[in-house]
Image: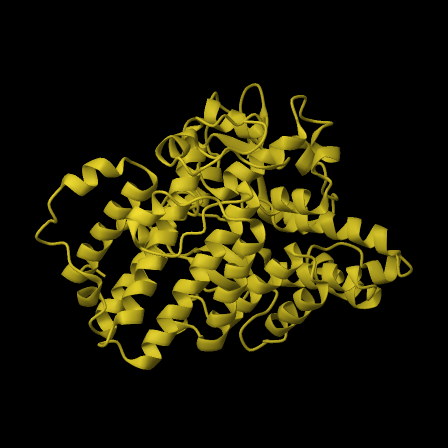
Length: 472
């Protein structure tokens, strides 16, 4: 990971991407090419150097604002936008998310947008380099292309759901990227589906060295199941989630809730490692941010909302395993405890950041089945989640439940099961059409236009082809 090829490639990626999305390109074109900047043919001249470039993408997912699990991540900002997290300190950027009054100048929003496009650029640079490479073996080239396409699809799925129409950047040419207009949503989803189809074709079913840090074909299928859920193609959502669920040699729901988020947990479909920090730290950012051992401050600016905690049954075992309390003189705070390690600077890495896991696939399939009227199968899937949480089985207490009531139960379980994971609650509220009904009662300034985040004003100022979302 630290060889000269990877360092030069990473330098190139960060410099060009910053030019394309974060800073002015005028200075960039006036600077001479550094001696250590190398062309993609050199980066991808053999399997080892190409592998280093791909590792750079996964490392960047941990370091990146939007995906790293820190204060500017999807998991935090979108949970504030929904109704699962609340701010515990005076932080105007985060308060704007909590109140759904995000300004186009919000720094957290700019960090989210620009860091997501940094990852997309890295994927595009890898794809460009791999496609012209003559030194990478065909089998490895196909696998790496599949991985880069998977990650690109993953990022775009979030961008299109958070911002609506966004620039569909598919090149590493910063001159094109800097002036890219917004594409319509159908075009963006077309790219996402095409990338995932290509990834499924070339990725195998195993994990490298048993580490669930690089996507396999089942990760691509899991993400495809979510894509089709969002597109309301219930049949395809069911089909893809079923392929993941039935891969029992790879995946299983763990009865021990405290083991779910451990490194290489059998419930994990795809994870991100803290090794990406490039330091000796061995904890996740989620653990460091959420676990509250003293009064809230800059490094611990959020806690679970009281009404979210109140949504759990007293018998729900997720409360004991995944929620903890900290009491100060004046207030009791509830904080997420899915990750148990707050800070570690040495030793083995015990936890990886969870990105995709099997429980979501059961929830996708039960919703897809319910939408198709396959209620017994849907009940069975939801009962798998409820049983692990020590809740009464619907098949026992409500075997004749109708479709509407079952869909309501699914949304409740999605909220309880997937809280503080990758913005699920926010995206669920939006796609279900219930976001205004639910949030308008708890957020006085809520407006219908708040369902999309603003395009960062700094980006609009640099790119005359970018337009702003309505309401900002």
